[in-house]
Image (cartoon, rainbow, N blue to C red; front, side, top):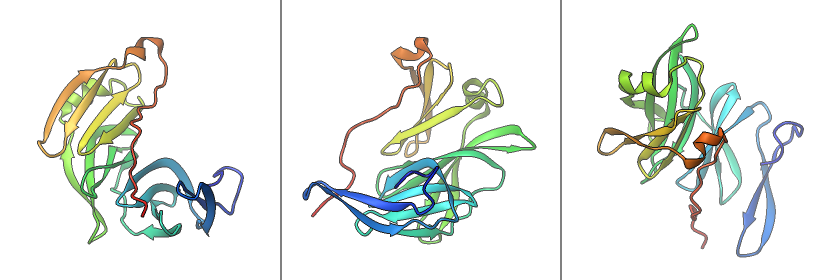
Length: 194
């Protein structure tokens, strides 16, 4: 995608590593204000849109954009898209009413019905421990069907195993004492090129 702040046309550019070149594809619909929250799942790049709140997807092979009519859950204050194993796409977010946080929930996209299905609620003791202040920022990232939650100055991460339905604390990043923002990244190929 091109610059979402200045360019209104937003052409989609795809890099082909075999040909070592970029190609231009369909222009992304301009009525959507894009979020930086995205996930790559089943050869599609899913992207949250902010205005209106929703979901877009791009077929990486063709560069074609499509609106996904899966409505986001009511009272969702903020959320993250996380790709899981076996074509699973998760939405993780805080739910609140009148700016009061009530819980953290996990939904899975039902690709056939195009609806978000709630699969889990974070137990209150973990929620209170993870987010001591109601406005505290959190991050969520995943690998296969493991979701990891972190919050600013927490010092440890909260891991949820979607398959086993188990919550557990894990050691935090060694850079936590420096108050640095760290990007968790595992280099791997997510797309097959034929």
